[in-house]
Amino acid sequence: MLKKNSILTNRQKEVLRYRRDGLAQWQVAQLLNVSESAISVVERAAKKNIRLAKKTLDAFYTMDARFFCTIKEGANLFEAIVMIADEANKAGFTITADPVELVRQLRTENPECINGQAVRGYIKVFIRDNGLVYFECFYE
Image (cartoon, rainbow, N blue to C red):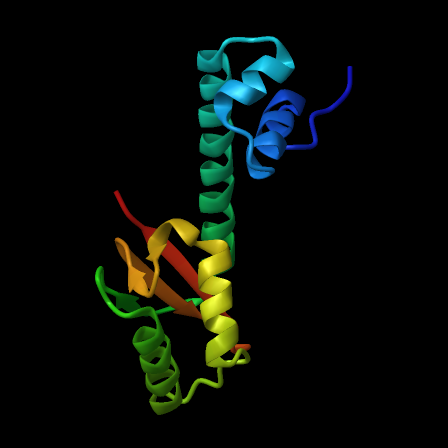
């Protein structure tokens, strides 16, 4: 018996690849010769698996980090990043990433919490002693 080494099934990966490449659910359904609702179920399960894996990683990375602050819903992303850097400096932390890198990190790791330049939901900010910053996103 082969051991599963992914949070996604092969079918989930296949569907997500097609969707990432711009195909609509009905197009993927035609390609795979299944119903559109079957594609919807597979895609929803894949996204749930990804969210759960991300929460696990967030918990792992933040367990030895210090809670630093919370970025509130509606905050301007760029102003929030500058505030984090300023507050970290005042508290004696040296953040290893520059503000542009922090914005990229936040957008890449938590796209569901960013809408244009506004924060959606709220984001907890953690800083480790080595200057690495981690974000934990909470939204509805």
